[in-house]
Image 1: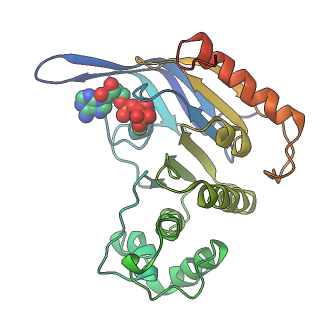
Image 2: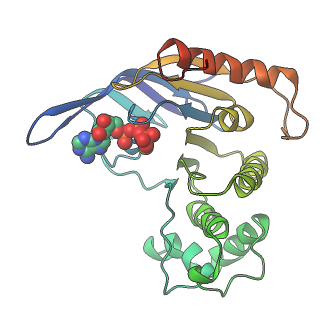
Length: 258
Ligand SMILES: Nc1ncnc2c1ncn2[C@@H]1O[C@H](COP(=O)(O)OP(=O)(O)OP(=O)(O)O)[C@@H](O)[C@H]1O
Ligand SMILES: [Mg+2]
C-alpha cells in the first residue's frame, strides 16, 4: 500500500500538573491508511482521548510524531470532524442550524452546503426534524445531529470519541449501522474510540488494542469480515476476533473472565 494518510510514531504524552506528572501515552505507533476505519479499544484512563486530541492538534505531544497527509501535526487541525461522547448542541439553534455550525464558523458558502446538511440528516433518519430544537429530540437523535455536524464540511477524517457511550443499547446498535452505511458510502478515514469490543470488531478494518496506563499498543488486529456487517448475521470469525481481544485484556489484568 502507498504512504499512509496518518502516521503515528513513538508517540508519548506526559501531562505536567502542579503536583506531579502523569505518564499517559507510552511509545504508541500505528498507521491509518486513507479510507480505513480504525478502532481503538482500551481500559479507562489508558490515553485514548489523549491520542485523539493529539491527532486533532488540540493537545501537544511530549515526544514522537504524528503526520496527517505527510504534514506534521503541530497546531489544531481544521480539516477533520470530531464527535465527543456528550454531544453539545446549541439549544438556541434548530437542528439544521446546528448541523450548519461548522459551515458558519468556517465562513463557507451556506447555499452550497445546505443540500449536503439536508442529505446527511436524511441519511441518519432525521428528515422532518430540521426545524426542531435540540431539547425536542431524544439523546440518540441529538447524537445523530452531531454526526451530521461533524461531516457537513466534508472533512477527509472523522474522529469519534465514545460517540455512543451515553446511548441505550438499541439506539447504539442503530447508530453503529448508520455509521457503517455512511462510511461505506463516503469512504472517509475514521478513527473510533470505544469501550465496546463487539462494536470495534463490527465497524473497524483494524482494531488497536491498548494496555492500561501508560497506554501502549498491545496488538493490532486486522478484521477480515465482509461488509456490510450485520448484527443478526455475524460469522463465527466475529466471535474469534472479540474472543482474541478479551484474551488480551485478560492477560493484562483488565478483564477477569472467571
Ligand atoms: N489535562 C490533563 N491533565 C492531566 N492529566 C490528564 C489530563 N487529561 C488526561 N489526563 C490523564 O491522562 C490519562 C489518560 O487520560 P485519557 O482521558 O486520555 O484516557 P482515556 O483512555 O480516554 O480514558 P476513558 O476511557 O476513561 O475516557 C489519565 O490518567 C488522565 O487522568
Ligand atoms: Mg476518553
